[in-house]
Every structure is written in C-alpha cells, then in structure tokens.
Length: 136
Image (tube, rainbow, N blue to C red; front, side, top):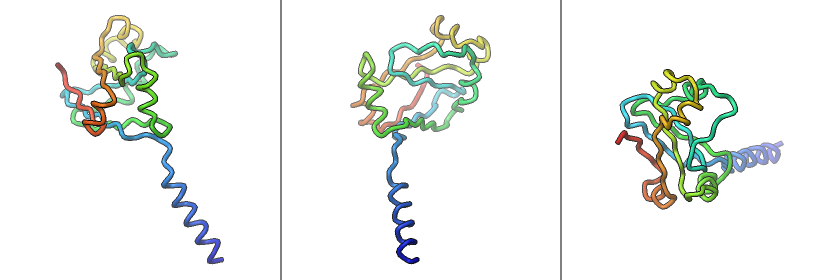
C-alpha cells in the first residue's frame, strides 16, 4: 500500500511539472482605457468566422490590468514568431469603445480601426516577455 501511495504522489508531481503551455508573454494595459487584443502570426488581423464583437468584448483588458495569454504548447510564442512573414509577434489592439460602436470585426479590420504592435523575439527576451501597451 505504501509503495502505491508513493507511486501516485510521484506521478502527480511529474505530471504537474510537465507544463505543455507557454505562459511567458505578459501584456500590461497602460492606455487608460479598456482594450481587447488579438495576437496573430500574420501582419494583418484575420477576419473571424463570426463577424461579431462579443468574443473580444468578453475578453477585454482593463486599464492597469495584466493579461497573460497562453499558447497550448511549449515554446508556442517562438513558433508564432517563426511562422510570421515579418518574423515578429503581431498584436492588434482594439478599443472597447470601437468594438461597441461598430459591432463588426470586419468593419474594424477593413477600416483599420486598431493599433498594431510588432515585436521581435530579441525584444521580447530583453523585456522578459512583458509588453506595456500605451497609446502613441
């Protein structure tokens, strides 16, 4: 019985230590306004299958809040950067006010009503994978 208990405890420690998601990226909203984010490997945001803003509104980042997106695999952010045409992580920032006003992601993308941040892997590593979003 004791051996079984030791085996169960050690296997749970091994399973917990095998983290297969990448949660290094940290994004801080320093804009003073609520925002929503889209992270893409492409240099332009993609049109979603549903042209609704609800998904973005549900995942808004309040002013001063820390957002930690997760990639479902180890070193997932490097893979996004590697597959990007500009070899950078591309973050698209949508104002919550714009999402509420237009109620169409396609309209926001078509009219370029977003801010884009492109950051290299070297810059991410130098900044300890933390990005502070500010309006220019």
